[in-house]
Length: 386
Image 1 (cartoon, rainbow, N blue to C red):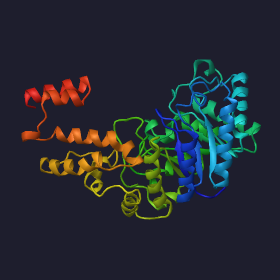
Image 2: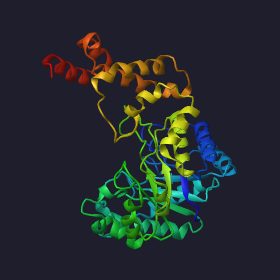
Image 3: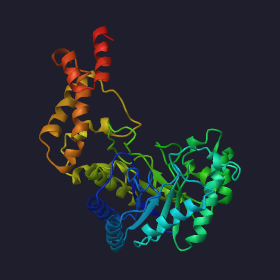
Image 4: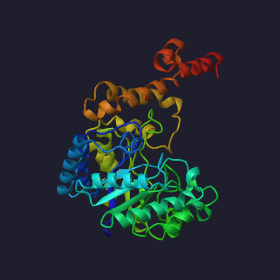
């Protein structure tokens, strides 16, 4: 398959979609011209923590209906399993359990499936130390086994070292990557997040090394808008620093966003601009308008833009920003606003901390708005005049 892969990853911590919401995401994927939905939520116990347990028949029925409906819409569902927390690489029993599990979910009509070994210890389990040189070699061996037993299934793989930053000695000298590359079947799609877990830029130069090591293009797992690692924040800015040219050095790009349904529909529209080769800034303005977000949002949007653009606004702008937030918090009514409400409300409170004069916060207000720990720190700062 040479078509550029694009779409949505349900791969975050802390949230889990309903099947109704997944169907809505698929409708959006079709609308923007995307191709895939990767099912890999960390909070699905059967996906990760209890991977040895079979999915209930009722869930498999719902999943099968979801896969069938998605296929009719032109979207391929890729079910994933993440057994790395407890998988025993020498165990024939574990392999057969994993194989049965992959067969059971792919039997729903999936032509592709994913093995995810992200966010686990990079150390080889002690029980496997005499058999394998590294965890990378163990993963390559497992993928070889799966390829032999599932010859018709297109396999995706998320390695334990899934970004440049996880190879502190250098990508070319990383034992895990070297051993993985030596043994992994060449037709397996490998996912990569770029230079870092959350990459500020994803451009052709950022992928040259990993592509050279693995011998083929990787699929980009893009965490730009993810907030499971910082659930008190939200990022809603333009889809910047992902030039169209990255399509020449990657096999695909999928968003792993927030797990907030309305918010993710908004973010997928930004991905749609990328897929159509449009300007990120112009796409963003169009999407804000299309989602009927009030014009006041434009005045505060830079404060909710990305993980890389956090700035403290000058004191002279505080009143203007808070006036813009007021209708967004209290007057704007929509499903998207309900999801954004806590972030908008918290932003207003944070801005008030910078206020002076009559709006300057006192200790009572701070205790009301913030957790006991943060309240104590802020009030100590207030009392010392720091």
